[in-house]
Image 1 (cartoon, rainbow, N blue to C red):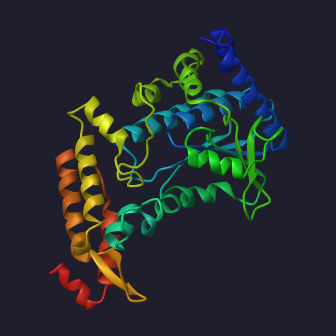
Image 2 (cartoon, rainbow, N blue to C red; image 1 turned 90 degrees about the vertical axis):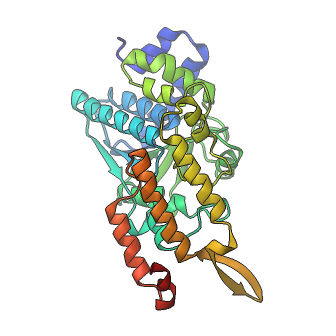
Image 3 (cartoon, rainbow, N blue to C red; image 1 turned 60 degrees about the vertical axis):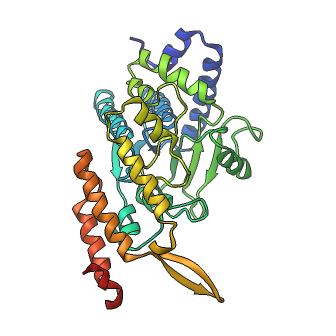
Amino acid sequence: MLKTLGDAVRRSKNVELIRLYDGTHNSLEKIYAENSDRWVITFSGGKDSTLTLALALDFLRLKPKCPRIDVVYADTMMEIPAMRRTASSMLSYIRKFARENRMPIRVHEVVPAVERRYWVCVIGRGYPPPKPKFRWCTKRLKIEPAEGYVDTGEPTAVLTGVRFGESAQRTGRLLASCATGGECGQDFWFQRKNGSEFVTYYAPIIQWKTCNVWDFLTFVAPGAAWPTGEVVGLYGDTNMRFGCWTCTLVRRDKTMEALALRDPSSPIGKLNEFRNQMLEESKLWRNRWARTRAGVRRKGPLSLAFRIDLLRRLKLLELETGLDLITEEDEHAIRRLWALLPRRARSALG
């Protein structure tokens, strides 16, 4: 077994991977020179964040002075079950890696505050499922829980796994905020956090293409003892995008569909069916409180009757799948919110 990822990539004799690895290594050297005190590495469990995590920790392991490292996994509590298991497995390995290499790594698994969780917002408050023009979920479920570990008032380098080419939308945002270590479009992307002089975000794998990521995780990383086989197996031979099993930012969740076809005995098909029904039924006038603004009737929050039925069906889905889909804490929060509704609205409770 080779000692480092650098050794493994050179043994592969893959010229393109060696070039990309060296570019990322140089980027990490520049980040380290600017901030060698504290690094935060964001981790989602997917292929890009797994690659970023492995490259960064392998790099820091050889440094005489290792910065304090916080690996932050923002658990939305709505992740596709297979992705949640894969992420948990990698975090367990990172804890072991820290002990074996005597590195100051702290692993944080953060969840949203109760009042900001998905089911509390949808079933408790009546938020319609997220859509591209009303994307209320990302900030509440992922960004806010991690913020407390990012901006602590001390110089901090935050490493992310964003890349050009992931999507046209993300590439556009990166180009619009283009700030690089070399000429624009080369080296690595970085950006100061708005309102903070201490936090800088970096994207050390921004130039990697999807095929490069897969080649590295499949053929190089295992040679240096990095257990990337699970994440490779999760994606299979398709370029899936993993997220919440309730995600309604797309009309069809092709990842869920592919997983259901791959293993018809898994509960993923039932989760996808529930997701599709919730999306379609939440659009119906009968399931929304109507609002009138400037003489125009508009759809408002989800009706209480629909939310009550949604909770009932969610609990049945738990029984059918054997999965924990909503916590008791969430249910208590939902019922507290229902109790605050006007008496007329509460009549639906029976």
